[in-house]
Image (cartoon, helix red, strand yellow):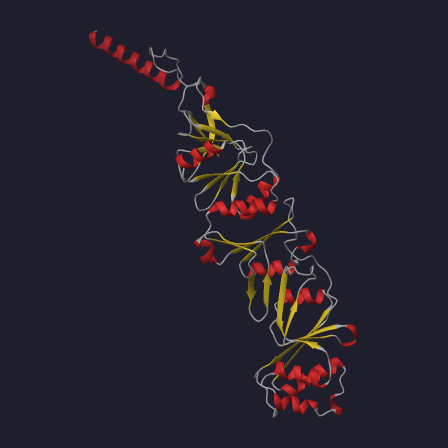
Length: 390
């Protein structure tokens, strides 16, 4: 009988414990203790990988470390994230958190809450976080305290009248990247080189350096965007082209649209030099059999490009060479957006443009030039040397 009473008592304790663990039971707070957080005090926030103390918008539940009647300070501002901020973050290839809230404990008396819609956070791959306060709602002394308490965070307040290029520049200054160059050329290619003139040349980290990825960022009008053929070629050389208009829209297409080429391509390969010169002369309409210029050309040169130059000079054909640069027309005193440098000669017989070259033209460069109406004569000499006996 005594054993049954003990068993019933133990069973009752078990059921009470189960009820408390499964069902939320409101218990009276002890005198002088703070009230338990109400349901409204539980927020969804994102946890930053680099520091678990700061939480903002990916939305994992956490409870505020303060009572419901003493919330942290909240910085509010009218409006949403300006489009130029979104575009600048995309140009850098970094993630912009513009929703949810960012809670920073230790700032002020009770911590600080920043809405992502008005103070978005740019998460940099190197672990830094840029709080972008485009509305200048964060007081200077509060911004200084944030950076003191949270060394991995910076407050960036771009001027209200800053254009997209200026905003990108300010983000790059604060991002802590390995290398940021302004108005520096980027050159890539082998036999044929392409030189670009972007606003910014960026290596974000050692990983970018090891992987050979360079970001060339520019803010341009649509008419000044790089030809799609060169964008594709740059990608082959691990140069990532980022071109935006002033309002943040892409400035040019990613790939070249189909368009028939108006120029024609002639190729010739020979082990002897004289046939190549004869074919070039024929293409130019030169009467070489009535002149003794060709033998003298062959005897006086050390390579075929020089022989071609001598041929053109002896026949009085105006030519540009021995390196030809192609670029788009640009205002006087300004730098061309791109320059394609090809070893060879450019002549204009009977109003047409003819490029004579022994370089291995990339197919995308050949496509671009022929779409501009330029004829191309490509020659290949298996020996590569010039002497009068050949």
